[in-house]
Image 1 (cartoon, rainbow, N blue to C red):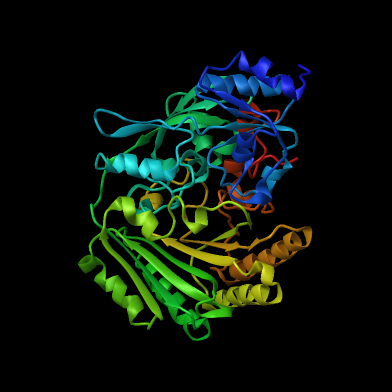
Image 2 (cartoon, helix red, strand yellow):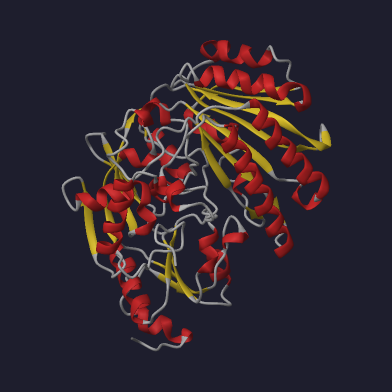
Length: 481
């Protein structure tokens, strides 16, 4: 084991890195910029930041960290909010943002994408060639980070989860070894990386299936319903009708956000409905009418726009409010099969009480997310480590507040009641599930990784084989402690 003073890291590690890589220590301003995360709740204790320029740089940094007995954490865009992230102490942050290459194959059926690429870059680069792949719906998030845990977005109905589109990947293991992982090379790890990948390695690049753009024209609509006391049950009953159809792939995403909007009220959260449609204004009209007939207070239309403008129209692209750093933003997810309007009313009342009794939580919200899920459900649930293909609805309680110990406790208390309420109202007999990428970290392991004994046993074997010392433990780890 090396004993290296922090100020000597440049000399000891630098000799093993390529010329385009970088090392930053405090108080360098770039160190501060690179350790800043989307949610300050998830900021750990970092001693050194390395920006590798190659896969070999990542491997050398992992070996260096091991030799110095330092924990390490790979960072893409810094949007993970798991409570495990802030448990790292005196850690090495391996920031992947220099690995931003996107190389489209000549045959146009796949693309090699670097581990530091964000969603905005993937969508715009591929769209310039008339192509798409599955991504998230937030331009500022990474592609591979969310992809290792699932990856929901408005192409889910067409092409499934992000992870369903990864055909091979380059993975740096906990000991610094580099593996090419695919269905024919280390197929056991290929299975585990797609759904539980943060437990096993750092992906420096991956090959993704890409597709012809389903339609060149898209539309985004928003409806404000400020009178939730009169309209909540009607709205969610309408959502249940759509989910039961099932939701067609053209109705790509259908969301409700419950949050305070001072334009209407400082005490009663509004319900904002937003849907994204793959098609023209005329094609979306039937769905538009379903919500205009409910008499919203305001309607915003972004009709017949190109795919590259969808995220900005939905206020989810780089630079939007949802992408800004600088607050404590936590997520407490739950997967559902259907909406129970009584439970949703109770969940709404929990949010209303919170923001009125504790004004510091005024920006908090509830996200109710429906996606066209046909592409995801077409994939055999046993073919990847992702366990929740039976869920039809993704809900998250998101407390947003200035950080304090007291406020942390309040947020957790309300979140616990919120998820218990929605779970009690879900289809009887269903297990509690939580989407790994949103998870807070207090959920049972089974809720994150599946309740099937064969699935959990398979993950345990993989962990023992590829990371027996549990180096990868700072993002909703499968192995705790």
